[in-house]
Image (cartoon, rainbow, N blue to C red; front, side, top):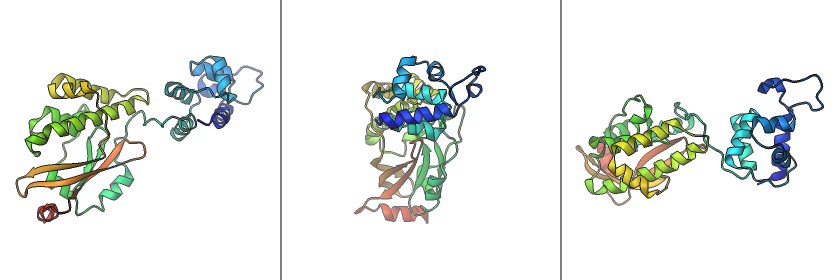
Length: 276
């Protein structure tokens, strides 16, 4: 935590605001160019003494919830909010509303991956885009439904037996554990931004519909899915074993999944036949 720089940053953001900007009456005489300290404290639902200590750089350690309240009170942009979190020694929270637009950087990479199956997904594993080889291997993407979490690969894994059919039955438990641990990490990260209805609804739905999900959720395992090996069963090429890589956007809201052949196996030849 950089208490001195945090104090200076809060002061600078307070100075640029006017009472009218935040719905307060200005009054005829003001000694400061922007908001008063007590006004920021009021807007953030904090004590005046606490906020004064923050601006004096006295080493007060604000919580993530307090930082979000200050960001709202000071009308910070997304970049400014993230900077506030970093100065206070906290990881920046994800956007409050996850984007439905495919990340352009991931999309540019996807368009260059011709020889390997690749798919862009949200942090809840909702498919957003994929290349032709991914469609051949994994199947066409489901259209986003209402609620949109029903298109999630995780949601379908636990609610639709056909979603598990392309994986050998003996691998199902391992994949289920991985999906649940990754979902718990995503839900916690989204909650850091102040709560997320979409993730909460998906989890509640799965707890109601799937005994397997409920059992694994109760274990409270947490692990972001970054790398794995998986076997898939395809009617044209048989069983294929691939490395599964994930590349995340900076905010963690989207990921590029690509499946690479494992050296020493027939996977490269199998993919070539599938792509041909």
